[in-house]
Image 1 (cartoon, rainbow, N blue to C red):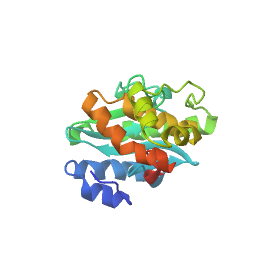
Image 2: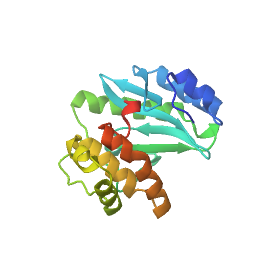
Image 3: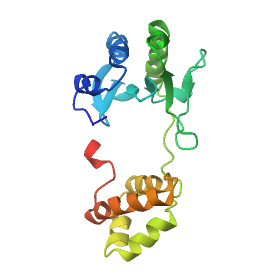
Image 4: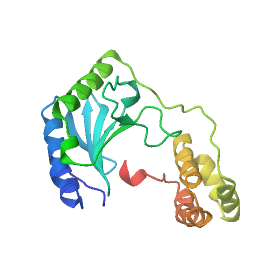
Length: 196
């Protein structure tokens, strides 16, 4: 799905689950949350903090709770979709309209808002060392100015590039990604700058 500028665009461009996305949107709009678009998708905030997002994929649609790891989750609906990568984010996957439970969703949202009011959150570990994959290091050495440009990037941007290459399963994918990002690194831009 292409990056949307509005929530209406996101829903209109969804290849599947349109009616279900509308249901989720209606539930979230009935709360005190503010509707925004972040990273090309619907995101709902409270007091400037990300609370929950809506997403649609081929085989499911659902919600992303940004501090979901702190929620009680007494219904056991939340999963860590990126085990080992995300500490706070939790996803609630739904496969049909019958999976949409308005009362439970509102209760989870209310709890997430309460966490914001209490100042509770799981912060990213920004001090953790950045492990740059060997393939990326070698490619930067072969590309004029790439290593120096990489060192000038903020740590968060360096981490995004390193994780982007490390997450590729196949060597062909790594090489394709490296070819894509080297000009971006040399230009001094972040991997996801166009979405910020």
